[in-house]
Length: 423
Image (cartoon, rainbow, N blue to C red; front, side, top):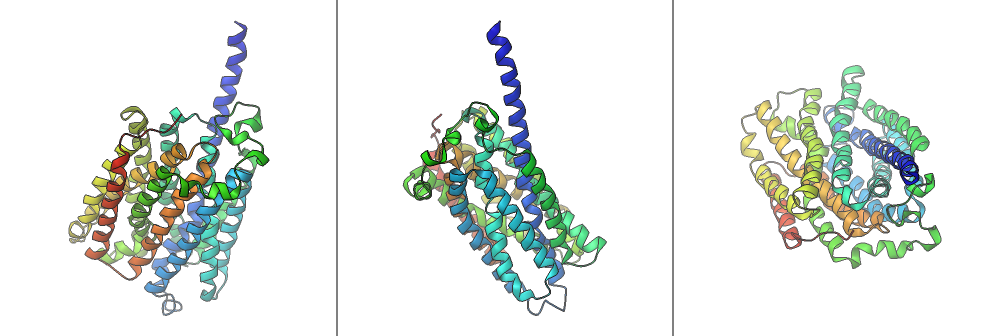
């Protein structure tokens, strides 16, 4: 009887802290998208603004995306390791502050020449979020629950991409008729969430008197050095494989994420600016459901094997990408929405499993941040192509190239079909 009465309050406290950390980290990563997507929403206004579109041409916008993504990739390799060393809190709060400041300057500074350094700062700031927050939430849950938990948690970036662009686009084009306001609106949202994160977040269970599910509570002097953490991906074959697959997958998702409104206007020239921003929401809505589905499937149907649902999702993505141009040739909004939804579901399903659940599982608890950072760093290198190529290419060649890359990603993962993470 004594054991029961003492265990119950601990279980209740554990559950409450799990829900609290899940919620605040989910909100935090979704909030990053309000400053990240501001540039995507601003593009349709920039290209229609004669005061800047002779300088900020479509090709230059692609170059700026590439600079942002290059900085993002560098940051991914570093910040996850620093989160292992210092804890997610300091890394994420610093990144949020940097991101908000960079976005505010892009909305206020008249000199478009400053966009390049500000996009680099934005890329470094945005890259503080994923690996650090993956480590944060995973430290509160045991590995046998992480497929479902991190699958559900990974809806944050689909949700962020879903609501951020329409919100900042609505503020910029409906309320103010000024593309610069998109940056200010995104920064305002992120500042609010920064304050909430500072109040409610904790790094690991030991900080609140609970048992840890991993090595996150080990004193800093006993944790892996920064050099050892950075070598996690280089030394581990599983992490390297995930990194390669993610490099091949990321271009397609980021092309639609960063260029969705422009792609829509090119395929359906009659739509207005706000409609062009809203139509790609289908991509995000489907992506919101995908991580939940694939996380549940990997835990329940494949007994914690992460690769089978990844490979199946990638196979479906290949078909959808290959058919994008012929299916949208009619200019039908309904068909565009449907195709984007299919691409969103399949891309986000594989993306969530590779970049979060599998990376954390195979990286081990002590190096979860470094492993997730390495995998996401590799993906971010691929994402550079997703930001750059739509500025120079279009039509069949672009989407067939993305389809070919997704096919290779699936083939890379097939040999790992039956592999399971260590508990």
